[in-house]
Image (cartoon, rainbow, N blue to C red; front, side):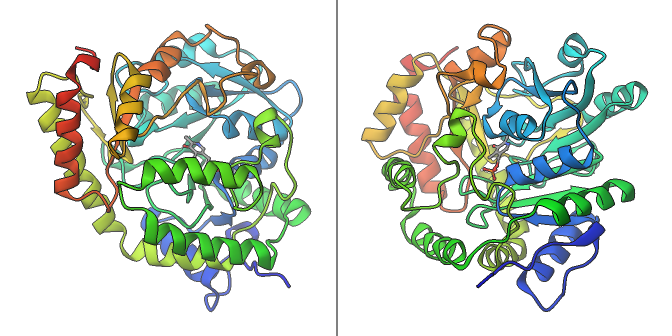
Length: 401
Ligand SMILES: *Cc1c(COP(=O)(O)O)cnc(C)c1O
């Protein structure tokens, strides 16, 4: 039995009577874009767009040296070469300046990632890329609702993609949403899908359904640190659908890599889209509280530049002794996260398999040693946010000033 019905040819609307068709429609409405393609994970969106752009073996894609390992692995799986760009320490994003240092005659695509929800300097980057005839794709996995000037992140590049993984702005119990802005590219994506897509089986669909329910029940902030450990353990042993297969972290292509979204994922997506504004408002309120409290405690925080209007998926803070601080938070049941733990999160060794040379992105390496992040999701009540701030104030000796 097959449970997928999400393949949309050329941005063609899916059957509106199906969960995938409905999710496609509301997701597209939010971004005012009809070319929406739905996959089982965010990385499949990136793979689709790379294949649709016809990457050849010497073609290079510029990506931040501060990302998830599944990003360079999608580039490699699609037959191209990832080239790493260092980040701006203020925004954790690549900047026009760092991009210009990394570009060469093989560069075919530029992947701009709005890290933590902080928008990249999209106008300058897009203008520059247009002149150089380099395609800009936005990695919006952290950035639903963030704006640069008036424009929503996800509406600037020739394509943009989103993830519905557990820790992202909203979850579809893993999932990926791809927006394509131009018609010929949308047609090319549809052709790639026609040739290569895998349909989700009922076990995948069932597992997702179960996991979303368990997640809903157990994801109170005090449980999260412990659950993360258990989840990683179980998915390593194949009991749960993990974010990544063990083989994937070693640079291999897992089975069922390029899979369409399942019904259970789409159903979750519909529910989440209906509550989206509330979700974004909540995140904005909690992040404003963190910003206010931390800066009045003299702790340095991100200062938005003109035009940067982030909605934070997690709120970043730099600390001195990150490992000790995370350990203390874990013991006290405080939900503090750590993205990214290395330039190619979460792997700590073997980065060279993905073409990353140690020392090549010094700011990214420094950020991965220093940055912790604070949750902004709906289970974080004001009381919980206060508890997190109190914890950080007490741990002031660990914080970089
Ligand atoms: C999570 C994430 C991805 C990949 O999303 P999946 O749905 O897990 O494939 C890509 N880029 C960034 C920046 C992410 O945080």
